[in-house]
Image 1 (cartoon, rainbow, N blue to C red):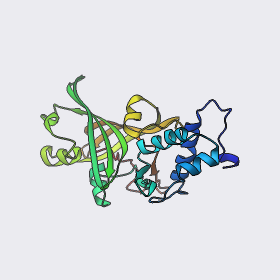
Image 2 (image 1 turned 120 degrees about the vertical axis):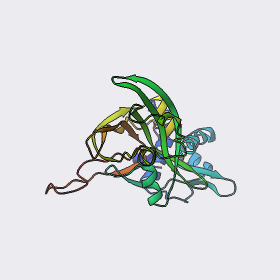
Image 3 (image 1 turned 180 degrees about the vertical axis):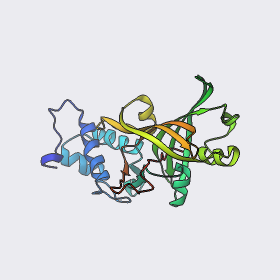
Image 4 (image 1 turned 30 degrees about the vertical axis):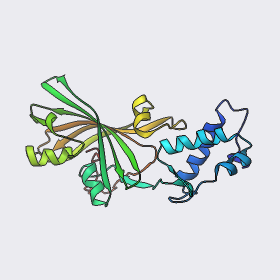
Length: 253
Protein backbone atom coordinates (compact mmCIF):
# COMPACT_ATOMS: atom_id res chain seq x y z
CA UNK A 1 0.00 0.00 0.00
CA UNK A 2 1.25 3.49 -0.78
CA UNK A 3 0.32 7.11 -0.17
CA UNK A 4 -2.71 7.72 2.01
CA UNK A 5 -3.18 4.01 2.61
CA UNK A 6 0.30 3.35 4.01
CA UNK A 7 0.66 2.54 7.70
CA UNK A 8 2.76 4.97 9.70
CA UNK A 9 5.04 3.26 12.23
CA UNK A 10 5.75 6.64 13.84
CA UNK A 11 2.06 7.33 14.52
CA UNK A 12 1.11 6.73 18.19
CA UNK A 13 -1.98 4.89 16.91
CA UNK A 14 -1.26 1.14 17.00
CA UNK A 15 -0.62 -0.43 13.60
CA UNK A 16 -3.58 -2.79 13.92
CA UNK A 17 -5.89 0.20 14.53
CA UNK A 18 -4.46 1.99 11.48
CA UNK A 19 -5.06 -1.09 9.33
CA UNK A 20 -8.57 -1.46 10.75
CA UNK A 21 -9.37 2.14 9.78
CA UNK A 22 -8.08 1.63 6.24
CA UNK A 23 -10.08 -1.56 5.69
CA UNK A 24 -13.17 -0.11 7.37
CA UNK A 25 -13.02 3.00 5.17
CA UNK A 26 -12.76 0.87 2.02
CA UNK A 27 -15.75 -1.21 3.07
CA UNK A 28 -17.92 1.79 3.90
CA UNK A 29 -16.88 3.53 0.67
CA UNK A 30 -17.92 0.47 -1.34
CA UNK A 31 -14.45 -0.43 -2.62
CA UNK A 32 -15.01 -3.82 -0.98
CA UNK A 33 -18.68 -4.60 -1.64
CA UNK A 34 -20.90 -7.08 0.16
CA UNK A 35 -19.71 -10.61 -0.59
CA UNK A 36 -16.22 -9.51 -1.64
CA UNK A 37 -13.21 -11.00 0.11
CA UNK A 38 -10.84 -8.49 1.62
CA UNK A 39 -7.11 -9.15 1.03
CA UNK A 40 -5.88 -12.24 2.81
CA UNK A 41 -3.85 -12.24 5.99
CA UNK A 42 -0.70 -13.06 4.03
CA UNK A 43 -1.30 -10.30 1.46
CA UNK A 44 -1.93 -7.66 4.15
CA UNK A 45 1.09 -8.82 6.12
CA UNK A 46 3.40 -8.56 3.10
CA UNK A 47 1.93 -5.30 1.75
CA UNK A 48 2.28 -3.48 5.06
CA UNK A 49 5.32 -5.35 6.39
CA UNK A 50 3.55 -6.16 9.62
CA UNK A 51 3.02 -9.29 11.69
CA UNK A 52 0.18 -11.74 11.31
CA UNK A 53 -1.04 -10.87 14.81
CA UNK A 54 -1.37 -7.21 13.76
CA UNK A 55 -3.53 -8.24 10.81
CA UNK A 56 -5.61 -10.55 12.97
CA UNK A 57 -6.25 -7.83 15.54
CA UNK A 58 -7.43 -5.43 12.81
CA UNK A 59 -9.72 -8.04 11.25
CA UNK A 60 -11.10 -8.96 14.68
CA UNK A 61 -12.35 -5.37 15.06
CA UNK A 62 -14.07 -5.58 11.67
CA UNK A 63 -15.70 -8.87 12.66
CA UNK A 64 -16.89 -7.42 15.98
CA UNK A 65 -18.38 -4.44 14.16
CA UNK A 66 -20.27 -6.77 11.81
CA UNK A 67 -18.53 -5.53 8.66
CA UNK A 68 -16.90 -8.83 7.72
CA UNK A 69 -17.30 -12.53 8.40
CA UNK A 70 -14.57 -15.15 8.35
CA UNK A 71 -15.61 -18.27 6.42
CA UNK A 72 -13.41 -21.32 6.24
CA UNK A 73 -12.25 -21.97 2.70
CA UNK A 74 -13.48 -18.59 1.42
CA UNK A 75 -11.58 -16.04 3.46
CA UNK A 76 -12.84 -12.89 5.14
CA UNK A 77 -15.96 -11.70 3.34
CA UNK A 78 -17.66 -8.32 3.54
CA UNK A 79 -21.11 -8.54 5.13
CA UNK A 80 -21.86 -4.81 5.24
CA UNK A 81 -24.74 -3.51 3.12
CA UNK A 82 -25.32 0.28 3.04
CA UNK A 83 -28.73 1.06 4.53
CA UNK A 84 -30.54 4.26 3.65
CA UNK A 85 -32.72 5.55 6.46
CA UNK A 86 -34.91 8.62 6.60
CA UNK A 87 -35.26 10.68 9.75
CA UNK A 88 -38.62 11.88 8.41
CA UNK A 89 -40.19 8.45 8.87
CA UNK A 90 -43.88 8.76 9.87
CA UNK A 91 -44.08 5.34 11.50
CA UNK A 92 -41.77 3.46 13.79
CA UNK A 93 -38.55 1.64 13.11
CA UNK A 94 -40.26 -1.78 13.15
CA UNK A 95 -42.91 -0.73 10.61
CA UNK A 96 -40.30 0.98 8.45
CA UNK A 97 -38.00 -2.05 8.35
CA UNK A 98 -40.77 -4.51 7.55
CA UNK A 99 -42.04 -2.29 4.75
CA UNK A 100 -38.56 -2.55 3.19
CA UNK A 101 -38.54 -6.34 3.47
CA UNK A 102 -36.01 -6.34 6.32
CA UNK A 103 -36.29 -8.26 9.59
CA UNK A 104 -36.18 -5.79 12.48
CA UNK A 105 -34.45 -6.79 15.71
CA UNK A 106 -34.60 -5.15 19.12
CA UNK A 107 -32.62 -5.73 22.30
CA UNK A 108 -33.94 -4.09 25.46
CA UNK A 109 -30.90 -2.80 27.35
CA UNK A 110 -32.72 -1.14 30.24
CA UNK A 111 -36.29 -0.79 31.51
CA UNK A 112 -36.75 1.30 34.64
CA UNK A 113 -39.54 3.27 36.29
CA UNK A 114 -38.54 6.76 37.43
CA UNK A 115 -40.27 9.59 39.24
CA UNK A 116 -41.52 12.22 36.81
CA UNK A 117 -42.98 15.68 37.46
CA UNK A 118 -46.53 14.33 37.08
CA UNK A 119 -46.09 10.72 38.12
CA UNK A 120 -44.14 7.57 37.21
CA UNK A 121 -42.16 7.52 33.96
CA UNK A 122 -41.02 4.43 32.07
CA UNK A 123 -37.47 4.78 30.76
CA UNK A 124 -36.88 2.30 27.95
CA UNK A 125 -33.44 1.86 26.35
CA UNK A 126 -33.24 -0.29 23.23
CA UNK A 127 -30.77 -1.24 20.51
CA UNK A 128 -32.58 -1.40 17.16
CA UNK A 129 -31.38 -2.95 13.93
CA UNK A 130 -31.96 -5.39 11.10
CA UNK A 131 -30.92 -9.00 10.64
CA UNK A 132 -30.30 -11.53 7.89
CA UNK A 133 -29.82 -15.26 8.24
CA UNK A 134 -26.12 -14.71 8.91
CA UNK A 135 -25.67 -11.28 10.46
CA UNK A 136 -27.33 -8.64 12.58
CA UNK A 137 -26.58 -4.94 12.45
CA UNK A 138 -27.66 -2.45 15.10
CA UNK A 139 -28.53 0.95 13.62
CA UNK A 140 -30.08 2.93 16.46
CA UNK A 141 -29.63 3.28 20.19
CA UNK A 142 -33.01 4.54 21.42
CA UNK A 143 -34.02 5.93 24.78
CA UNK A 144 -37.71 6.63 25.40
CA UNK A 145 -39.40 8.30 28.37
CA UNK A 146 -43.10 7.46 28.61
CA UNK A 147 -45.80 8.67 31.01
CA UNK A 148 -47.29 5.64 32.82
CA UNK A 149 -50.33 7.69 33.83
CA UNK A 150 -51.18 7.94 30.14
CA UNK A 151 -49.96 4.41 29.38
CA UNK A 152 -50.75 2.32 32.47
CA UNK A 153 -49.19 -1.13 32.32
CA UNK A 154 -46.87 -0.21 29.43
CA UNK A 155 -43.88 -1.59 31.33
CA UNK A 156 -45.33 -5.12 31.10
CA UNK A 157 -45.09 -5.40 27.31
CA UNK A 158 -42.23 -7.29 25.66
CA UNK A 159 -40.61 -4.66 23.46
CA UNK A 160 -38.09 -7.10 22.04
CA UNK A 161 -41.04 -8.68 20.23
CA UNK A 162 -43.49 -5.77 19.93
CA UNK A 163 -43.34 -2.33 18.36
CA UNK A 164 -43.84 0.47 20.88
CA UNK A 165 -45.90 2.54 18.46
CA UNK A 166 -47.99 -0.48 17.52
CA UNK A 167 -48.74 -1.06 21.22
CA UNK A 168 -49.71 2.60 21.56
CA UNK A 169 -52.09 2.36 18.62
CA UNK A 170 -53.68 -0.98 19.45
CA UNK A 171 -53.83 -0.90 23.26
CA UNK A 172 -54.11 2.81 24.06
CA UNK A 173 -55.65 4.29 20.88
CA UNK A 174 -52.78 6.76 20.68
CA UNK A 175 -51.27 7.57 17.30
CA UNK A 176 -48.02 9.56 17.20
CA UNK A 177 -48.30 12.10 14.39
CA UNK A 178 -45.53 14.68 14.72
CA UNK A 179 -42.30 15.36 16.54
CA UNK A 180 -40.00 18.22 17.42
CA UNK A 181 -36.41 17.01 17.35
CA UNK A 182 -33.01 18.59 17.79
CA UNK A 183 -29.89 17.16 16.13
CA UNK A 184 -26.68 17.04 18.12
CA UNK A 185 -23.50 15.01 18.48
CA UNK A 186 -23.34 12.32 21.16
CA UNK A 187 -19.87 11.31 22.35
CA UNK A 188 -18.71 7.72 22.39
CA UNK A 189 -19.54 5.78 25.53
CA UNK A 190 -19.41 2.25 26.88
CA UNK A 191 -23.03 1.86 25.73
CA UNK A 192 -22.38 2.99 22.14
CA UNK A 193 -19.37 0.67 21.97
CA UNK A 194 -21.56 -2.17 23.25
CA UNK A 195 -24.22 -1.54 20.60
CA UNK A 196 -22.25 -0.37 17.56
CA UNK A 197 -18.89 -1.98 18.28
CA UNK A 198 -15.55 -0.19 18.49
CA UNK A 199 -15.31 2.90 16.29
CA UNK A 200 -11.95 4.49 17.14
CA UNK A 201 -12.07 6.84 14.15
CA UNK A 202 -15.57 8.18 14.96
CA UNK A 203 -15.46 11.29 17.21
CA UNK A 204 -19.19 11.20 17.91
CA UNK A 205 -22.60 10.03 16.73
CA UNK A 206 -25.58 11.88 15.29
CA UNK A 207 -28.30 12.11 17.92
CA UNK A 208 -31.92 13.21 17.44
CA UNK A 209 -33.71 14.11 20.65
CA UNK A 210 -36.99 15.79 21.49
CA UNK A 211 -40.70 15.26 21.91
CA UNK A 212 -43.35 13.25 20.02
CA UNK A 213 -47.00 14.34 19.94
CA UNK A 214 -50.36 12.96 18.87
CA UNK A 215 -52.90 14.73 16.65
CA UNK A 216 -54.20 16.68 19.66
CA UNK A 217 -50.69 18.01 20.36
CA UNK A 218 -50.51 15.98 23.56
CA UNK A 219 -47.10 14.62 24.50
CA UNK A 220 -46.66 10.95 23.64
CA UNK A 221 -42.96 10.35 24.19
CA UNK A 222 -39.68 12.04 24.97
CA UNK A 223 -37.01 10.41 22.90
CA UNK A 224 -33.29 10.35 22.20
CA UNK A 225 -32.00 8.35 19.22
CA UNK A 226 -28.30 7.80 18.58
CA UNK A 227 -27.48 6.55 15.08
CA UNK A 228 -24.83 4.07 14.00
CA UNK A 229 -21.90 5.60 12.05
CA UNK A 230 -22.56 3.03 9.30
CA UNK A 231 -26.07 4.37 8.71
CA UNK A 232 -26.60 6.61 5.68
CA UNK A 233 -29.35 9.10 6.50
CA UNK A 234 -31.45 11.28 4.25
CA UNK A 235 -32.82 14.62 5.39
CA UNK A 236 -35.31 16.44 3.20
CA UNK A 237 -36.77 19.92 3.15
CA UNK A 238 -39.25 21.98 1.19
CA UNK A 239 -38.97 25.60 0.09
CA UNK A 240 -42.68 26.17 -0.52
CA UNK A 241 -43.90 25.40 3.00
CA UNK A 242 -46.29 22.71 1.77
CA UNK A 243 -44.18 19.59 2.26
CA UNK A 244 -46.15 17.18 4.53
CA UNK A 245 -42.81 15.72 5.69
CA UNK A 246 -41.51 19.05 6.95
CA UNK A 247 -41.86 17.96 10.58
CA UNK A 248 -39.32 15.28 11.47
CA UNK A 249 -40.59 11.85 12.45
CA UNK A 250 -38.41 9.74 14.73
CA UNK A 251 -37.45 6.31 13.37
CA UNK A 252 -36.98 5.16 16.92
CA UNK A 253 -39.85 2.80 17.58
